[in-house]
Length: 337
Ligand SMILES: Cc1cc2nc3c(=O)[nH]c(=O)nc-3n(C[C@H](O)[C@H](O)[C@H](O)COP(=O)(O)OP(=O)(O)OC[C@H]3O[C@@H](n4cnc5c(N)ncnc54)[C@H](O)[C@@H]3O)c2cc1C
Image (tube, rainbow, N blue to C red):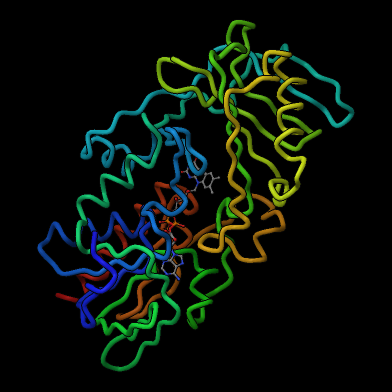
């Protein structure tokens, strides 16, 4: 990876954001032998893709129709495995009544990535090598008739073209006028509890739960492939992760839903994405109200939007991040031709 003082002050192409979209685009551009500079605010690549000890605190699922993601995994030599889906779901209604007789798995057919999705971002970052500059938050972007000026950490970079591979809500902070587009999952808290074994499977449960009593709204099996250990993960409503009682309330809920063996997790980790300024803005602390109808965000010849929220298809998802990278690559080639 590039060192702080190595950022060239003039570049052909500058990509802002080293999430899946920015990384995939940079890798494709480098494969053509072209120059690129990638500026990433965080001290790690991957953006919303984040695994800790192999457990995903950001995205975890890929679906069989995600042909770009499956092709990427295959190219990188990274294995996937099916989401565990054998057995019954647990349902808790708003009065706390619990049913365990529902033969249904909400994510049946979905795939997970062995070792977590950070393996994908790490492999792409490796391909990009010294084009990637971490801990380089971009503060402003200004387009003029001959190029684009990018300001980051006291340095000014002049680039012929800039790709904004980040949520449009974050691009507005850089002084760019962007249509209002919600950032998918930016308000979520995701919690993972790990156990010595996936004990719920012994009771014929598949690890899925839907609960109207909270703090976790939906829960799934997050055990690694082969289930050498057990893990459950849950999504909580925006802001839940900020409450001091969140961890204990989540474990109490797992006990209600899956029984007393859930009381003693080996580890509980969680991430409240709504508090992460490299993903979320204040508006992300209120529920998004379902999946937005994402579409391409208008670009100019010099300033091009990528990032899953600007995807031509599968917007919001990992597949959309790759779709947006592909569309940005096409428009770079078209303008260059
Ligand atoms: C909890 C959670 C669960 C999810 N589950 C799934 C799932 O199961 N399946 C699925 O397909 N999708 C899922 N998603 C969505 C998925 O994570 C996204 O579609 C994908 O990661 C978006 O990639 P991206 O590159 O477009 O954006 P990001 O990953 O957000 O990348 C943007 C990058 O820009 C950087 N950045 C921001 N501001 C600046 C700045 N000023 N200067 C420089 N860099 C900056 C950020 O640090 C980040 O690295 C989930 C998301 C979350 C949060």
